[in-house]
Image 1 (cartoon, one colour):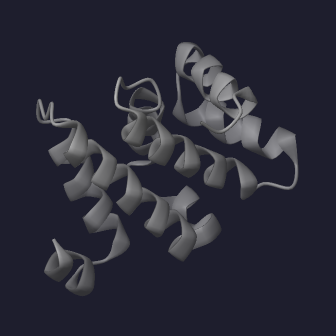
Image 2: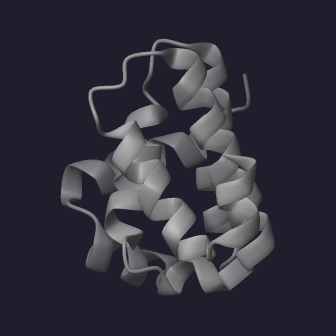
Amino acid sequence: MCSIAKYCSEGKVISALLQYSNANNKASQSKAKIALAFNVIIEKLGKGVLRLKDLSTFLSTLVAFSANSSPDVRRESRKALKAVADLFENKGELDNILRRNMNEMNIKKFRSVMETPEE
């Protein structure tokens, strides 16, 4: 995993992580590590994360992880979602990105994560 992160672009790393997370992976420890990796990528890219080819899948995966039964997975995915929200100074700009990349149900889940205090 470290080699992939060192020698590949962020977009390729995110694509690989998304494929792994969506491949019937039920291990919560793996999901927590994936969410942690997403946090690191968000920190590194900043607003560049919004130009990702897989942005809709990226956000939907984080929203799904935020409702996981494992507290580690929930904590890391909520941190990542809050980091994405913190990229925006203007709430309208965030709403536009969410509407373009997520369905209404996931937008509601995203907003409920933003309103939930840290665990």
